[in-house]
Structures are given as C-alpha cells and as structure tokens.
Length: 344
Image (cartoon, rainbow, N blue to C red; front, top):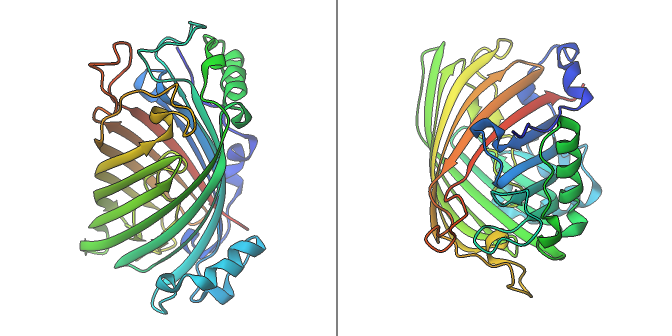
C-alpha cells in the first residue's frame, strides 16, 4: 500500500496565520500535493507536487509586485491581458510529477505498460480576469528523465513510509529538456447568489503546445455553496498540462468563511504526450495512447480570510490502448490536496 507525500512543516502552522483582510486581495502561496493513494492505486500518474507564488491582483501590469524581474517586464507585452476592466496577476511555480507502471517490483522494462517517467518543471504565468471572463498564458521549462529526480523522490518517500520500493527506474524516459506553453480562456455563463448560497457555471477552453504536452481541451465547470467567492474555479492538473492561477474575487461577506463544492467535466484531444509518446528523439518507450480523453473532477473547498483548503478527485476515461497494453490500467485516478495562505 502506498501513502501520500508527507506534509511540510509550514502546513502545520496554518492556524497561526491569522490576520485581518481577505485572502482574495493579497499575494499568496499555494502548495499542491497530488497522489493516487486516494484511489488505492500506485500506477500511471502516481504522485506530484507543486509550490506556487501568486502576486496580489492589480489593475495594471505596471503595479505588479513581488515577482522576479523577468515576470514583471514580460507582462507589458501581453496585450490581450491588459484590458483595464480585468484584474491582473502573475505567478511562478516549481513542481514535479512522476509516472510508474502497475508492477513496481520488476526491475526489467515492461513493454505492455506505461514507462517510468518523471518531470521537474519551472513555470511562469500571467493572467487577467473579472467575474465574467478569464484570460491566461503560462510558460513551462524543465527536464524529463534522471535529472528530474523523480526516482530519488519516490524511493525516499516509499522508504520513509515502509512501502514497496519501486525497482524499475533504470528504464525511465531518457533525459530531455522541456519547453511548453499553455493558454486558457474562461467565460462565465450563468450565476446566482441570494446572499448566502451561490452557484455559477463557466465554459473553459485551454491548449498546450510543446514537447511535454500538445493538447486542446474544452471543459464545463460548476461551483455551488455557501458564501461563494467570485471569479473562476481552479482545477489542479499535472504541471505543464494545465495553467496555474488564482482567479478569485471576494464573496459578498469577505470576512466570513466560504464552503462550496465543484464539478468539472473536461474533454481533451492529444497530439502529443511525452509520458506516452516517449522522448522526441528516441521513441523506444512509446506506448499507444487514446487521442481523445474525458476527465471528471469533483472538489470540496473551504476558504477563510487568511487561508484555504481544497480537496479534489479526478477520474478520466481511457488514455492508453489497453487492447495493446495488457498490463496497463486504462484510465487515470488522482487526488489533490491544496493549501493556500496569504502572505502577511
């Protein structure tokens, strides 16, 4: 039985992070821990983590603060994100994701299953939004293969928790640099709020271009609950696959907690998936993938003025051709636990 990644010390300090104000008006840190332990499995997309820093929302890019210099200077070139009626935010993040076959006790390569693979990525993003629409752009760079340190991370965690040690990492994808770009557009279709309960529905379109993922996705998103914040839902996806953002606006009662649920139905068309198609210069580890994949994500979200906690579960349709991969699991099943807190 596999267990999830251990929580870092800062997460134990959440109760102490109390101050006046609203989470939606400040810069924030986000820690995202993903694992398939929530579905009692240990294969395909097995684990991942992301640390993100999001700027405070501003009315113009010139007022952006707390970001590395190149993030601030590049923002002025994104004309579609510069409309005066949209709030602007930027982020940087670092993350790691790993994939393993079903039988991690075997040392030899398993040709009838997905390969061992790991990616370590650094991302920078710029996005603009109000309560009616969202526009975003994100750039991803990093590395896949042994330099991603996915092998060392997984083995260390399994040893710490007394779980089975994965033995096939010598067969992982080879070293390759990653360059990817993600774009996203969301539009609010319907919304309602009686001062206590709120709900909304949004349409999301996003695409990724690069050697990590090249895909186009269409999603319908719903949120519903108590003291619902404005803005748009964030769905945690593997680094490079979808954008990172915090497109949130204060609820009607900004000093009170918000408790709400979410549902997202998504369909994605893949032209390229490095974890399935193998290295771009060496197709040795290529496995047959399905070109169109659906995903359903459900979430529970609790937000306070100083911090927030989100828990989501993702289940997909078949993303590999199990008729040709006898030992592979057909679909993905993944859970994510997300902690956010504003910078004091």
